[in-house]
Image 1 (cartoon, protein in one colour):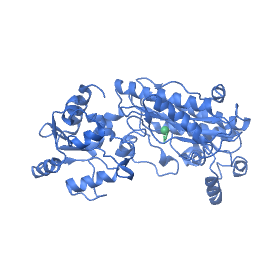
Image 2: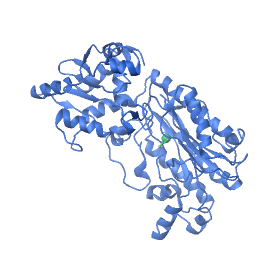
Image 3: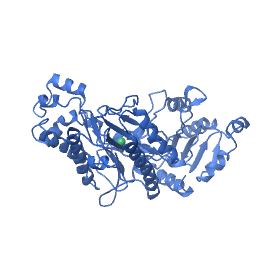
Image 4: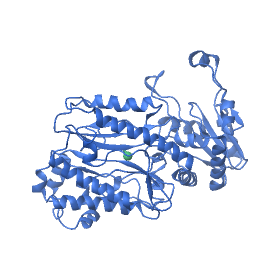
Length: 457
Ligand code: GLY
Ligand code: MN
């Protein structure tokens, strides 16, 4: 945990930003995986962690701005808990460490909210993302699941604070990134043809565990890199394959790293693999070089997509003007996802609060295929931490679908594309901090070019 003052100052700033009313924070509870006591790994809600720093189940909190009160609602451990889980500081002691002096039993929260509503106070809530949050809102505020109306003032205030990382947060993110980088270089060193994908997963996840970290999201390690979020690990890696790895560490405090790499199964890439890999790297480097405050990330996305289109045009797979192809949406045949996303306490930071607020500053998102998956588009500001992860993918089902509909024939040469249909996919991903005049990569460098990867093979 950070020092007490960090949490006190964050709450003070939040109160000033929202101005009035009562802010309700729903913590996360334990969740049974296949029966009640066999739980998923516990993860506290990230906004709860950000303002209260308490990574424990069974808590909710209130910041009553109108009456200048900050309260944690939760129950002290019973003797049964202590017998099974060992003794611990009391909830009151834990809360005091982060500058909260009032703790009340969990069941008193409803009473507190009832009185606030009777007194005419506005209760601000955040969007829900777990069924248990919806049930809590139903019990506490009589809001039926799906009928909640989150407070835009509350969302915007939280997003504005969490989007701008402080020095101490950046240090913690950089620790996650360093462990993440080691996970990737380990995968590059251990991979041998004949291995199962899961053997590589075991080796890289061991690096996270050995550094006191968990995973920031379920590992992707696949020979079918054209499937963007492929979580199957049962294939054998054959000579001539590429293994796409997308994996990250999460520190004990909850901060994430998120990197991707594409590794040749053999000691070197084939000339054909290198051709597409070089296009991905050119797109990646163009994006990184464009990062600076004031530049809309939408422009960086379009630039990186146009570099992919230009590279594919050189191969005869695309035609026409690359930037026109991007504006029309033809690039999405090969790059149907976003270029990157904010990263912090969540790997897709604050996605639960709404991408429109986090990545678009309240402006509407495009509905165009490909572009609609861009999680970040707003002008960049110092303190933003984001990923850069362009990819080049050959998705047979998408090729067939668009070809069947005759889509973008002015930009895509379908006859030439047929020769690449089984190629797979390539993605490389790094994490960046926007500084006052540019951007800084976070964490150790991982191999980016084919030569750099081959040097570890
Ligand atoms: N690394 C997973 C993702 O960005 O979606
Ligand atoms: Mn990512």
